[in-house]
Image (cartoon, rainbow, N blue to C red):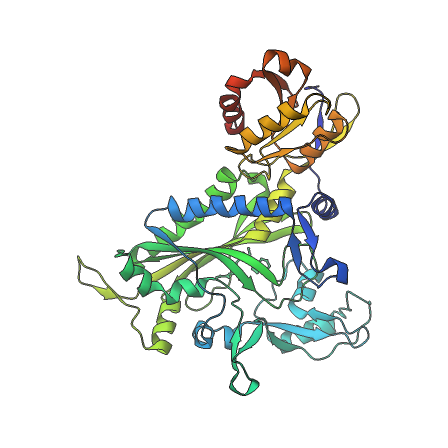
Length: 466
Ligand code: GAP
């Protein structure tokens, strides 16, 4: 059944949501209590996919990257971190409430959704209100036109530290992981005796009180970031910026296998005053092009602000030139869940097979697939012992699952739908000839392999280009 397969990769966000919930990738947060807006729980397959993404990123940006080390900073930090970073004063969204249905809406997004050519980021409240009035933009929820004035809402989740209300100090859940990397610049440089240029990578949770129009896990209030800050001399900084742009492109296309035709760079037209360059990589999601990650030339802004407020030096003394300077930062910032969504959208296909049957198949890179292998006994009777023994043996080296429920055809389809690259079937001949059948997810071709050659054959098939 290897020929005359027609493939359709036109995926909708509903296809992905349905697959995610029914196959254990992503569940709505607090599901049994009718949910909590913009929160999600990652199921057994989702957590495997997320872990694979994070492991590959860590290798690419930390362990196998030049001059880079890792960090695991706290979610809670001194309030001054967010004063120095500018988040206390400036990290806000322009929101307005519909007086008819009480739904809160982001004014800039309402305008951008009305006209895709407009970028309303940075507009004053007055400019936003004028546009909304002139174009009579109605509430997307109830269709009425009855807005409150626009107010700026800070996106940081606030909490309090202290055992009694009286001595409670206001603190925040971090809205990005990057600040730990900046405030630990000296700790890391000195303890590891690093020479500039060097990088610090970190993976961790971040929280933003976002009002969003849905789009599944694209924009959520709790998410994980994989961020890498590269500290370098200003003179070399644009070369490092270009290098980190290429690095993230290589990671997404070559390491993860996302198709290049669904990706593009988008340079920021308006730069903040301290930035020399900034760009997003965008993915063509089913709902349109959306930001996947960012590469930012942040100048000396972050380290200088922390130096000024903390009164602790952020300068570096070059041991060869004796030059003392605050290093320039090149940031690479990637959200785990957004990449997860792009990977699923990119891998999803529906296929009509030669016999008229259809299948959904996730053409995931084997390094990302929740399971690399599924072991299936053709029948339970007489084969369970041999199949479970093989399953246990393979678990020592691979991510493996086991399925003995239903017809073999249905079991293949289930594995295709969750992206398992190889199915290994144990049949009655196995008991005689000590061989099994390996079925390839993409071609559906089957090969018979001796158990003694099995590990080598699996490795060969998993590393062929998918
Ligand atoms: N330190 C820089 C920074 O945080 P950002 O553009 O605000 O920059 C970087 O965020 C990345 O984090 C985004 O490109 C996206 O992948 C992810 N991200 C940001 N906000 C998110 C949200 N509310 N939900 C999911 N992912 C988000």
